[in-house]
Structures are given as C-alpha cells and as structure tokens.
Amino acid sequence: MGRDSRQAAGEGGQGILPKLLEELERCKAGGDASGMGWAFAKIGTFYQTQGKFREALSFFEESLKVFRDLGDKPGEASVSALMGHLLYQQGAWDRALESLEHARCLHEELADRAGLAATLGKMGNACEGKLGWEQALQCYRQSMEIKQELGDRAGLALTWNNIGTLQAKTEQWAEALEAYGQSRVIQEELGDLRGLSITFGNIGRVYHQKGEWREAAAHYEKSSSLHEAVEDALGRATILNSLGLVRKEMGDLDGAKETYERAMQILRERDDLLRLTVLMHNLAIVHEEKGEYRKALSLLEEVISLDKRMGNPDLKRDMLVFRRIRRRMSMERDLQAESWGREPGDR
Image: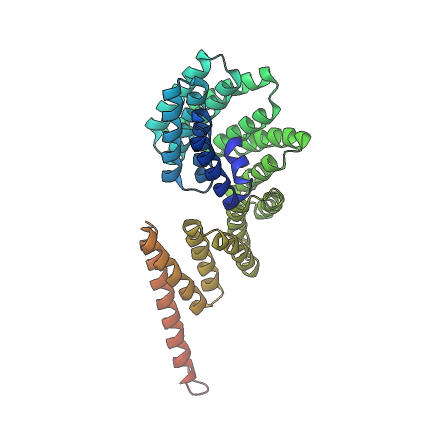
C-alpha cells in the first residue's frame, strides 16, 4: 500500500467521507474547479482504502476530466498515477500501465522528480503482474535513485518495502528480510508508525511462509499494535486474520478463535462484508477442529447468506465446507449412538 492510501485510511475511517463530500459541495458552489478536481481525487482515494474500487474509479475519472478541462498537467499527472495504482489493484494490468505511463511522461515534462519517483514505484507494482519481476525491480531501482537524490527517506522506506515484497514472491527470503530491515531502520529513525505497521506485517508474512510460526506471530502482534495506534482499523483486521492463521497452525485453537473474533468485531462495525466472510470462514474451521460443529455450521450459514447477497465467488467453497462439517457431525453422532448401544465387553 502506498503512502497516500495509508494516510487516507488513517484519517478517521468512515467519518472522513461526509467532510470530503462537504468540501466537494463548497467547491462546486464557489466555482472552484481546481478544488473540485482535488475533492474528487480525495473521495476516490477514500473509497480505494475501503476496498470499494468501482466507486473509487468513478471519482478518479471525474477528477481527471476536471484537470484535463483546466489544462492542469500537475493535477492530471497525480490523478493518472492514482488511477493506475487502482487499476493495478483490480488486476487490470494493461490499463494500469497505460495510465501510469501517461503520468510518468507528464512528470518528466514538468520536471517533477518527486512525482516521477512515486509513479515509478507504482509502475513497479503493475509490472509485477504484467511484465515480470525484472521490469518491476528496474522501476523500483529508478524510483530509489531519484528518492536518494531528493533525500526522500520516507519514500526510500516505501521502495525498500516494495523490493522486499517482490523478493518474497520469488521466495528469496533472506533478501526480502534484508530489504524490509532497511525499510524498518528508516521508519524507526523517522518515527513513522504507520509505515512500521506495514513493515512488521510484511516481515511476519515472510516468517509465516517459511513456517517459522513464533517469529511470524511476534511480528504480526507488533504490526497489529501499531495499526491500532495509528487508528488503521482495516489494516489491523487484515493482520489479525494472518495472526489467527498462525495461531491455528501452532495448534493454539483458543488463541486463533479469540484473534478472529477481534478482527470480526472491527469489520462488523465497518460493514466490510467481503473481508468479514473470510474471517468467519476461518473461524468456522477453528470451531470444526475443536469439535464445535453447531457453532461452525451457524457461522457458515451466515457466510453463505452473505456470499449470495454479494455474488461472492467463494460461495461454492463455503457450501462445500458446510456440507463436509454437517456430514462429519452426523457421522460422529452415529458412532456415538452405536457406542451407547453396545454391551460391556463388546468390541
């Protein structure tokens, strides 16, 4: 996640949207076209942090139209980069790279080195999906060179994180941890708690993938605490889900249950139904392993209902798990009934 997105996520959650809409109306009423363009962009960024990509794209497109009509190239460059990152998140690689390349050209035309560095970082993200890891790494290195030139230490930390994530995807575990370590040192020097919350989570994922559960859990716990400190509730819910998985893999089913329940409470308060179904599914599996079949089935009934309402592609998987648990409960009940019917000494 980029710095702009992290900032928007931490500025009040759902409470920020009414203020942004008020800002948009004030700009419209006052005939402030440039202000309208930036208000559209801020609302798009807000929806992006909430995972509402369709709404985000709509507001970015409105913003881009305003800036193009005004001939405002800096605004057009900034929003093109934001759109490119959003399209990358949606898996629309071609459109993402097209939008980011447009932003890159504008930043170069404007001699905007900081904007160019940020856009190259976003291009690295998109290249991972479309052009491959070598091209992505080249973009990250170009971005890093400019950030070093500008003395942008916060930007360097972000690029080290991107490089670490790229190396983790190629299972270069030692190199990934070294890159995340570089990012962590800078963020600690800057007192960047939001950046550290992400870095600790990324380090936790490396240890998780390596099967080093205790190290993974320790880093996830640090990440969760930092997400809470900077009031990034959705980020914390995501990390708690990962922590729950690790605790389950460690055999700590009660710990996993408590962790999932904390994350579910966060998502219920924000009506984030898609992420909520993932957590409920995971908690149902924990109940199954604890032999608490009725609790598992009750959760899955709610999950399946939400899947149908949202058109969630995980519906088939959740129904299969529901049927499996129901069969397992029925088989154990039959075995128990058979055992009660035996005479002492029967085999």
